[in-house]
Image 1: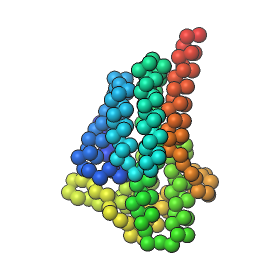
Image 2: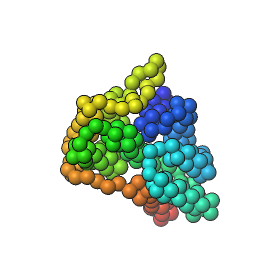
Image 3: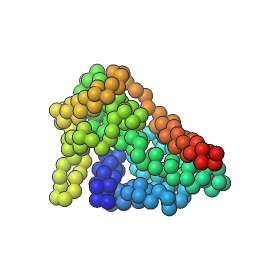
Image 4: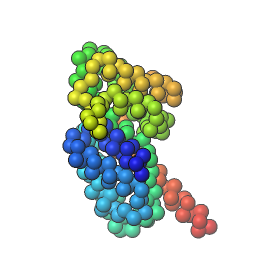
Length: 224
């Protein structure tokens, strides 16, 4: 339990949620979602997700599209168009996918990279490698809870008593080191050396649809 809570809290910090109290609450609710998939309702999951989404560094367009997806799924569950097994599988798939850590990189980009005192050419090069790392997380080519992520978290956070706090800014050396870690992970996992454009809502829909379809196939095979 403690291990899962540590992972959840670290992730939520990286999502750019500014309030410490909300980080703690978010960590507990995320842990609850992961560990109580069978009992959680669509309305509860929707409420948790909407709160998290509203506090991220996503664009307003992405937030709006994600809210629409949540509304659609909630209505489908209420109407019985999505079974309990399918809904559980969708939640499980989302919580285990690389989507959440990939979303966290929006915070890194907006808080550190975009505000760095670098030439546009340098920023573009760094953004390319960040996008490669993000694409790898989303497409499960790069695992999130690995040494590379731990090293990045060590760079962007500082100890304050028993808690870790995100830095307001990074030095050029810290930024370069963090991006190099992302680049090395992308290179190691053979992610093409190009900038990837990520449409968050579409990627989330893909993950949820894959989980739903997989459950439908399992249910169909059990009936045969």
